[in-house]
Structure formats: structure tokens, C-alpha cells
Length: 168
Figure 1 (cartoon, rainbow, N blue to C red):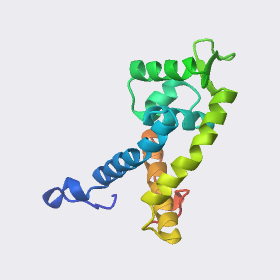
Figure 2 (figure 1 turned 60 degrees about the vertical axis):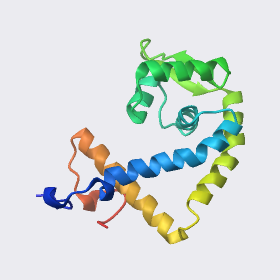
Figure 3 (figure 1 turned 45 degrees about the vertical axis):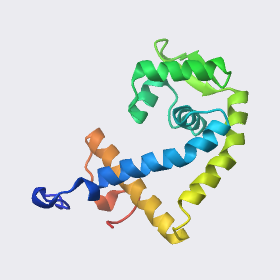
Figure 4 (figure 1 turned 180 degrees about the vertical axis):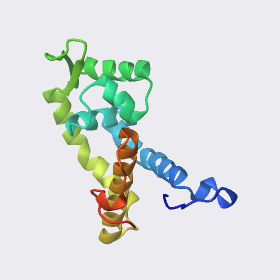
């Protein structure tokens, strides 16, 4: 039986992992948006460009799933990026139904040019963390996402087998 970290009788949203993660995400987005706007992006556009840059998603279907974004809305954002010559679409040679997305040379250069401003904002947001605390936070978030991905895939999620190491 899994460890019972929460109890229904004492559960409060303000101290739940889900609430805290969502709140941190929203606050980070708020901190990043001025730097992104100065570089001509919305937060959603930036995330799409970074997913493409880092190979985290190569088509709109995967982007929609990862970002929990409506496919119609995401298509409009990709259209905007394509109109600015930052992203290109290409039919997959293996499956003609699939459309692959990739950064154009201009898209890659634009993203790379914006990274220093984003890094500066992230460093400001994390100013109160020691290097060890940030490493621990990153390790634990990596462990959590790995365990959630394994649950989604229907795999066994023994924490000892997690790529992030042992239990916290």
C-alpha cells in the first residue's frame, strides 16, 4: 500500500503539492513575462519554442498534451510563430497524417537571444535558494514528474527505481 502523505480530515489545498506547484508555476510565469514581452513573445509562445529547441515535443499533438492546451488555441499560436518565420511545419515522411514542427534558423537565433533575459529572471526568482537547495528541488521535481509519467504509462512506480534516486 502506498504511503499516505495526506489525510482527508486534515487536507488543505494551500499545503498540497498540486496547489504549490501550480502557484509556483503561475508566479514564475508572471516574473518571466516582462522579459519575454521585451523579446516579442508571450509565455505560451516561449514555452512552445523551448519545447521545440530542446526536443521535448516535435508536433502539436504532443505539445497539446504536455502543455494541457486546447488544440485550436495551440494551432493559432503555432500559426503566429510560423507567420513570424520562427517555426516551420513539415509532413512526416513516416506518417503523412503527422505534421512535425521545428524551429527555423531565425527561430533558434531568436530563442537563443532571449535566454539570457529569462535566466536573469529565473535567478532573481531563486535568489533565496542555496545551490544545494536548488539541486534538491530540481531532483525532487524530476522524481515527481518521473513517477507521474510512470503512473500515466501504467508502469510500476517503486520509488527506489526512480531515476531521481531514493525517497525524500
